[in-house]
Length: 120
Ligand code: 5GP
Image 1 (tube, helix red, strand yellow):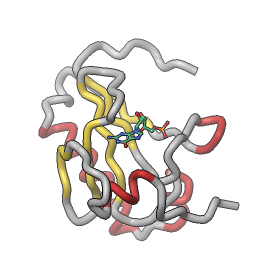
Image 2 (image 1 turned 60 degrees about the vertical axis):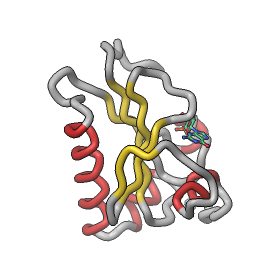
Image 3 (image 1 turned 180 degrees about the vertical axis):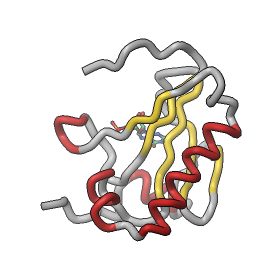
């Protein structure tokens, strides 16, 4: 069973404009902003506008339109920031074992240096 969505999570507050962020991109489906503790020269978080706890929650419940809009936004941000040719990484942590800290779906976009192998 998926956790109930908590609308007091930090990314919900950012989406509502209650807490500032360093915005990279926004459209109907997604908001993207710089991670507060970047782990690469480019470390952007992309969150859907809808209230989804995790990638799993989104995959299970989002409409095809929301999923398409979110995935397109991620691709757009990568291209607009020059990440595609040198390459980049897309990552979503899910749940406890995934190390997910904030319970609103967010995709990490990392780039700007060789990222090395995946880590466990
Ligand atoms: P997770 O471990 O949930 O996949 O990643 C959460 C990410 O959110 C971390 O990389 C963390 O640095 C970032 N983060 C946590 N709080 C804030 C915040 O208030 N603003 C921004 N921009 N990033 C945050």
